[in-house]
Structure formats: structure tokens, C-alpha cells
Image 1: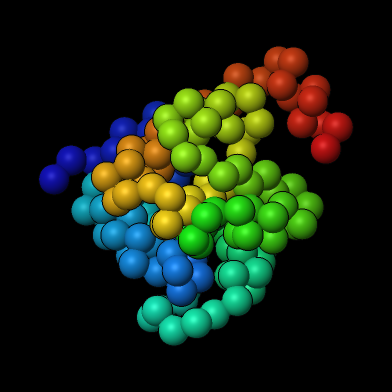
Image 2: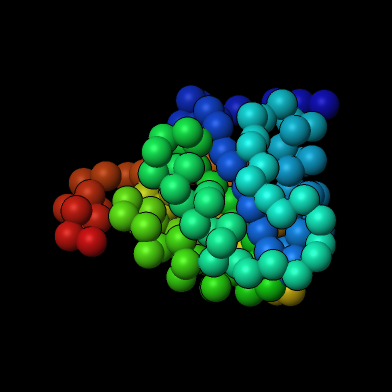
Length: 150
């Protein structure tokens, strides 16, 4: 078992899903726990049908209140969760589907939530994307100026 070395970018993450993303959420959560990364699960806690906006709101508000540094949202496509989370002031949720989109979401957009689609990516890729998200630093500079306009 090895730790994820994050260079102190993030200390804590929270995770949530809807019913479509529940299994992948559990896989990601367990993967991060196995790597000794601090993760807080805001639900759901089974695969019964739920409304994704409720869980995006729970997670987004936790980040807004600085109870977690970043978030991981999982639904069927990632899109519904991202749209819902982005309604919250100071949240920048990005749907990520490959390493380039993931790194750019952090480098250029300073995304504080990664949204994943359980129907679009597999478990192995989701682990790679989450680790890349957690390890990638925001570049600042011209990107900060643009983020301030949001």
C-alpha cells in the first residue's frame, strides 16, 4: 500500500454520487482510502434511486464551507452532477473523461470538483483521473484573471 503524494495541494476530499454512479463512487473511495488519502463520503450509501442535484449540492456546499478541499462527483455521465454543483458560488466542477481534460481542468480552470461518468469510463481510468486531478496544480497567471471573471 502506498500513499498518494500530493505535495500538499489538497489534504481532504469529499465524494458523492447518484444511484448510477454509486458502485464507481465506492470503488474510488476505497481506492483512496487504501492509498491513505482522507476522503469524506456524503452519500448515497446504497444504490437506491436518488436525485443527483441533492448530492451535488451537499458536496458543493461542503467545499464552499471549506470542510473539504476538493470533491469527486459520480453520476451516469458526470454532466448532471457538474451542472448542479456549478450553481453554487465558488464551485468549479469539471466533467473529466481523459487525462488531458483532467489536467487542464486543474491547470487552467482551478476546478475544485471532478465529475465523472460511470457509464462512460471504467474503474481503472477513473482512478487515474482522480489521482491526476488531486496531483495537478493550478497555473495561475492569465488563468486566474479569467477565473475571477466567472
